Length: 174
Image (cartoon, rainbow, N blue to C red):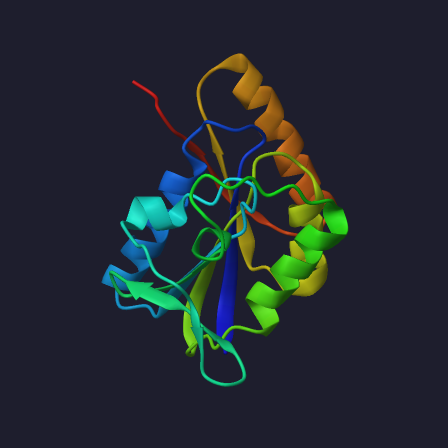
């Protein structure tokens, strides 16, 4: 029930990746698309905070029902933990959570599913590429040299994973 999966990633943290992912999802919904967003940044699930969404997820008896706000269907580890509780998981547990977000959620005929990835080039991006066909990735960076260097590595990672880079957004530029 998902036509296009769009990953939003970054080579490093603190570049505004989640802000870009949330704004992209809302913009696609305002343009008439049916849109969902997965907060795949398991260690720092901030999508619910950015959407002002506090809820407990429910099920329809078989699958998890995503929360809804601003026309978006939303899934996040932030709905399953306490606000200040750290998530201390290794790669296989991250992979399992991502699998659940894709396979055990009652997504309703989505035109776009935006996936807010954690920063870096690690387990979650690899799991994403092995789980679903990804239409493309957007890399978020800032103008600082260290961020740009990490972004080049992120673009190279997506290339190795056969995920086209749709674009690079330089955030926090003047």
